[in-house]
Length: 157
Image 1 (spheres, rainbow, N blue to C red):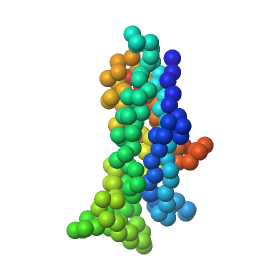
Image 2 (tube, rainbow, N blue to C red; image 1 turned 90 degrees about the vertical axis):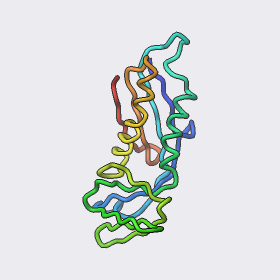
Image 3 (cartoon, one colour; image 1 turned 60 degrees about the vertical axis):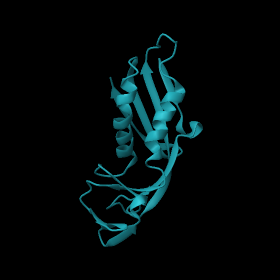
């Protein structure tokens, strides 16, 4: 059996900006409104359901609230240098220098901030709580950076 939550319809959305160094268009600082979708495959529990929709949505909301309205920076990208100064975070990307207030920046332990990487990042953080449900055999998590385009990551338990 499969349970699905559509992030656009369920309000599991966040807005953030990023850049992809070396990409002709996406190498410039730009933003998206992202939606997170969830699919759980498993068997029904004694209550007759795979998981409580509300619990799953709250778990996702807690994860995405951290990303919302931030500049998402991949800490492991070889072309990005991060300089932390008192009162600012500077990014050196090729010939460009960006300066942000520290609270606006979120450094992610990723090699790039792409839909593929973000879907895996969120999956890694959601999986432990989903696995504790006990009757879920697979978690699939999708991250769309616009309607109709996104990436999915999956984990079997």
